[in-house]
Amino acid sequence: MSSRDQSPPEVNKKFRVAVIDDGFDTSLPVLKDKIIAKLTVKCDEKVDPAANVKAASSTQQDYDQIKKDLIASLQNPDPMVCQFVEMPSLVKSPAFQEISIYREEWNSRYPKRLFEPAGPEVPQSVSSNTAASKANSEAPVIDRAKFDRIDDVLSGEGKYIYHGTNVASLIAYKNDNVELVLIQIDLARGYEPEDGQLKCLTQSEIDRDIKLYSDPDVLRANRESPLSPDDKVVDNLFVKYNIDFSNQSFGGPPTKIMEDIYVKNGCSPISLGNYKRVMHEFDSQREISIRERGLTKDKSLTISAFGNDAAAINTPADGEECSKVFTINVGAIDSKDKPAVFTNTGKCSDVMAPGVGIIVSAPDNFVHAADGTSFSSPLFVRHLTQTLKPQSNYKDLYKKLKGSNQVISSSQIPTELLDKSREQLGGLSLTDRVGLTSRPFLKHHLPSNLR
Image (cartoon, rainbow, N blue to C red):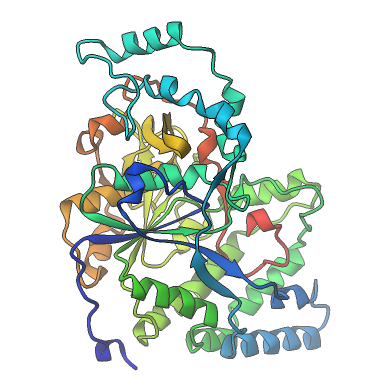
């Protein structure tokens, strides 16, 4: 069925935004009235076909068999193993109460910026610095180690909920133009592998995969491949809720950092640039073909955080951000509308939005300031929902934004969401070190927190 045989999706009265992250405190007032679905991904265990690929192809016969198996897997994808189910309710542990007593005092440091419930209100005639000093002098000393790990004492089947709550709150705050579909997925925190998880790569293995995924027969099978059962589940979900935008405030490390990780863990030096370039072509050809053949009815546009590694990402060889199709990458600016010290930059950056001193709502109604492109992305989603109207598709918007270098200045963001008095940090807040790569291959080489 061609794309022109499909009837256009219904236009929503409000923007439907899917927030994909590692968990949410859905009880927050800023969120609960906006949520139309809260889901998590449940997958059955299966053997990864890539794990059966031989470590190296010593003969042409080995290569031919690997190629044959790969083409077969493209033509006949594995049976469905994942589904979306209702997100489990959070159960606050006794340890959480010890942290919760700090909430009112902590929130009082951000007068006029609160999400609800508000802490003690400070008269507008009192400067924020004076108010903060007053709060510091009268309040008990906060155990920051406990506060920064608030997520560890909130249990919802062990899900980390801090980051997703931060992100969703920025889209929802005083925004009557949105309805949220919250989707919890498992994300790894940080880029460093756990002990014993990293299997060293050899350059011969990488070169073999470069040859394999650039093989004309493999590329042809890839372009002609059907939607996998798991892809259909995702597509059906986005169609069911008629999603307009999808926010993804996570990503993988730049290529150079990945190479350094292997060396740091005792592996021989490798070069992944050409592999990244080949996989970009492989993935984008498939995605474009799927859209052209009308196999997907998902109209949504993905808005993605561009990363916090202060790296220049100019080509697919530099990082996965250049490989994402129908995605707008958002970098971070500071309160002076200059690139933040931590943000990735380069030709694959499409838009810049504030990402320093962003006031976010955290679990149990804590309010605090945080840094990262993780927060630039939802602020840009918020900007779109405030300045546009829902559409039947977003192809024209994608073309307009892709590579536009548009800057959403601090003046375009509600002042209560910005802590402009705070100096830009050279490092990152603990809430924004999420590492997850989305490459579908090399899974047999990478630990779970690099996949």
